[in-house]
Amino acid sequence: MPSFDIVSEIDLQEVRNAVDQANREIDTRFDFKGVKASFELSDGKILMIGEQEFHLQQMMDILRQKLVKRKIDLSSLDPGDPVSNLSAARQEVALKQGVDSETAKRMVKAIKAGKTKVQAQIQGDQVRVSGKKRDDLQEAIALLRGEDWGLPIQFTNFRD
Image (cartoon, rainbow, N blue to C red):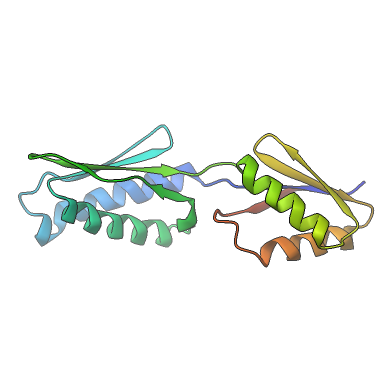
C-alpha cells in the first residue's frame, strides 16, 4: 500500500553555518563596534547575547537574513522573550523540530475533511498517510501544501 510521512525537520548544519555567518557579520558591522554581542547554538536553541534589547532586535534581523540565504524556513523559529538587566540582554530562539501533537491532529482532521481516499495516523513527531492509489496520496499532499501549519513541513519516505 503506497504511503508517505509528513515531517518537520530543519538542517542543523545549515543553521550552524548561518549562526557562524551572523557572528562574523556582527564582528564587522559599524553599529556593533565595541558592543559585546554574539550568537550561540546549542541543543536546538540559538542564544542571542547583546548589551541592550535594541541590539537583540538587530541581531534577530541579521539571523533571519542568514537563515533565509541558507533556505531555512523562518516559521521553524520560536523566539522567546528578551531578558535584560543592567549589563546585558539575552534572548533564546528555539528551533521547532517535528510535528507537535496538536498540529498533527489538525492535519489528520484536514485530510479526513478533504474527502480523499487516504488514511492518516500520528506516529510520534510525524504523520503517516497511506492510501490505495498514488494519485490519492498526491491529492493529500496538495491539500496539505495549501494550508499554513505554522511550521515547515516536508513529505518523506514515499513508498509504492
